[in-house]
Amino acid sequence: MEKSSQKKAYILTVDMGYGHQRAVYPLYDIGAVPPQIPIDPKYPVISANVYPGIPKVDRIRWEGGRNIYETISRMKKLPVVGKYVFGILDYLQRIEPFYPRRDLSAPTAQLKQIYRMIHRGWGKDLIEKLNHKPLPLITSFFNTAFFAEEHGYKEDIYCLCTDTDIARAWVPLEPKKSRIIYFAPSKRVKDRLMLYGVSPEKIYVTGFPLPKENIGDKKNNKTLRETLGCRIAHLDPHGIYQQKYSGLIDNYLGKQFCRVDQKHVLTIAFAVGGAGAQRDIGITILQSLRGYIDSGQVRLILVAGSRPDVYKYYQQEMVRLGLEKECGRCIEILYADNKAEYFRKFNEMLKTTDILWTKPSELSFYAGLGLPIIMAPTVGSQEDFNKAWLHSIGAGFEQEDPRYTDQWLFDWLSSGWLAQAAMEGFLDAPQNGAYHIENIVLRGKRSEISDTQLM
Image (tube, helix red, strand yellow):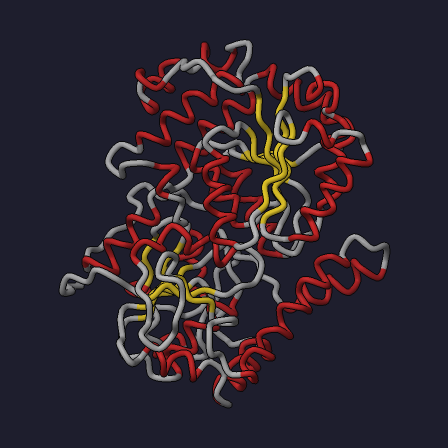
């Protein structure tokens, strides 16, 4: 694939949860502002469901889907009814078992409905505006890739998949005829896309785009190695893992980055998903670790994201527990009033975070930053596959009872288990997805992961 030197692309996503927007955040520096869509030039990412000038009918179509998903996600924890209602939604979005390998190209009822809406004009206004000055288009949502193809977008269309396995909904009605090019975050996604009928020459295994500020130079990933070198000391306080695997650590991390003294206490970040579910787990963790927090041995960051309701909930709980004076010292609530600022703050926070506790969403890929993942319960079929992927590379573990975090977490630390998980993620999870994608889109170079894992 040869291209002329392209310096910019349109970065397109949807404002639904965090996954699709977090996926394109590392690419915003190559984003262009469309002449017909007045978005912020400092963060040139287009949200297909809320862009300036979106027709009312299109906004209503998007809002209906988002409101239903977020409401049902929060309902899941309700006894009997919640699980039943969520089960129906999850079934409609299910990912079929991979084995036995078979033809899975037949479109689903959900996909046919999406195309009926597109053929009635859904997304046409957006694509017409982008066509005033067409550039390569990178999108992290399947509907918007379909918009571009069906409404005659005049440049290349790239679709970035956001989980370790994907449903049939990601692929067009007639995949063999489609010109959409896919970026797969894992080899399993490439294999799945081929079962759905996508030609292998239209798939690049790039890995998930991780934030460049957490990786550093793509040649040696200096920032990543420095932060992991510091993290290992906290995750292996008795040196059990470091002693046993000193050769491996020195070889893959680099001796200059090993055994670096930490300048902060053990830091745990609990991140709530985009629908705001599971926020109560953060308070349970806080209550369990309160003795360690009060003594200055642990710092806890409650990640509220860009949801004011979650932020307010954590503030109220801090007051209820008499901990409002601790906020900012050993307890922090990470919040921003927009997602771009939230992602920036979150990525900065990760540089001094030792353990990331979250449901296995798109954040599963952040194991590639050398972060051990403690997994909260899954929400949706795709997160079950993400959980399996984290297990397969040894970078994540399911949480024990959060009420007893003060017991089991320190057993894990004493054994060096979490240090091993950090190294496994660093060694086996892809890290340079953003750089691979830039090489393909802007420079026409076939740029892929060379040592992909089965999963």
